[in-house]
Picture 1: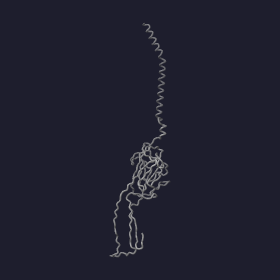
Picture 2: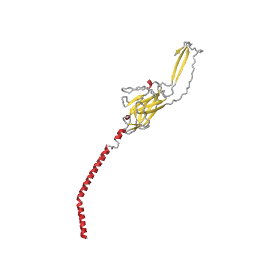
Picture 3: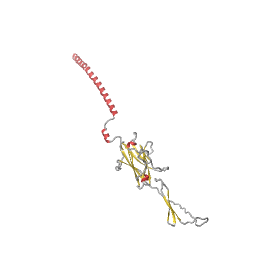
Picture 4: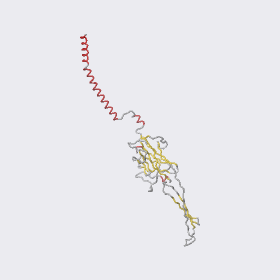
Length: 285
């Protein structure tokens, strides 16, 4: 409310949305009412009655387009990006960045999870970020580096967190929201100790957008270990082959003994037969 001495001016603004999250068209309409300081009280059938002027305002609005992408990096500085299908071991870290264009608003990760297929609703899944905060705060295998502070959101997570023994492919999914307020308001409040506390949200659910990345391939062994073990058989197969070789040697030894005994027994008979045959030939002649 203001006054110029002769008039009193009342100023107010009508807002179409009070949330910090953009879910629909956001409009501010500012209006002012100006009244004389000296004004006679309305009398029945008086000529100085206060008239109210009602106006309807029609605004043309359009939807905005936002491009959100998820990228994987090899280093904690987010400089060396994966341009091919990543092959990672269980000990490797995944460095994930979610980026938004244009860059005048703030992006906020709402939920993030992984699945062994590209279907984000697949029954087998592992959730590691819920309501913009890590599921477990004291967890060295997961670190939310930036969220709700700018046009980029980043986190680091270790592979073994969501690799099942029966699955070799990983797909990452995140739902994101666009925050139009300052970073101090958009940044989630996740405590460092005890139970996770989050900023109070309105009960009405906000529409979110999903972004995905995949596949990430599970590497069963690194290159060095693979070269060392190349050509080696598993212990079970080695044991089986050893047993077969031992049996072969035993059988060979038995046959060798029998053959040696037979050679010792049969040569004299062969000599007798030969001599007998030779003797019979001489008599006949």
